[in-house]
Image (cartoon, rainbow, N blue to C red; front, top):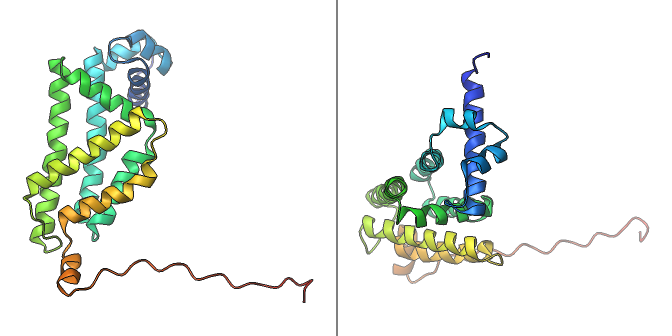
Amino acid sequence: MPKLTPATQQARRARILDAAELCFARSGFHRCTMQDICKEAGISPGALYVYFSSKEDLIAGIVERDRTKLAAKLAELSDAPDLLSALSKLGEHYAIEEPPHKRVLNIEIGCEATRNPAVGETFYSVDEFCRQNFERIFERAEQDGKIAPAHDARTLAEVVSLLGDGLFWRRAVDPAFDAQKLLPVLVGLVSALLNPVENRAASAAGTASPAPKAPAPKAKVKSEAAQ
């Protein structure tokens, strides 16, 4: 049997993780079997066990892959000139653009973390990773004079994480939930917590930030026939 190239191995590993995400979200951690994942991925059990030895190992792979993607997005957030716009974009990605099964999967992993030490270690390490990164981002923004919050960076990070958890939970359990409608309200709440310096300056001057201008009405164009 020819040896698989690194690119082929990486693609197969990704396909297995994609299949595991769908199966765990659809059936739950305990009802889902390794055979279910093999069928979803279109591979043999022997091929699966080359990459992952257990369902816990699969969850670790899923979480690590998500952590890598999140780390890149948080790096962009840290360097963004407009922190609130960048936070809004991040929220749109996770609450609107990602498929709903990802939110169900996160809840499934979180529940399993409360009773499975191996999954718990993986879950809580990423949970803390998120909070620490938000804390550093808020500390840097305050040091750079971009925000003037009333609370310390750690508290802000915990509150933002809490809002995110609630948003993800609602999207997972409520098929009618409209994240697109509520996300601007949540961004407004985060803005009040962060207190961007330009908003504080406007408030001190007794002026409000200018409201977005309504689009100008389009001019009516006569058709050639009317002319």
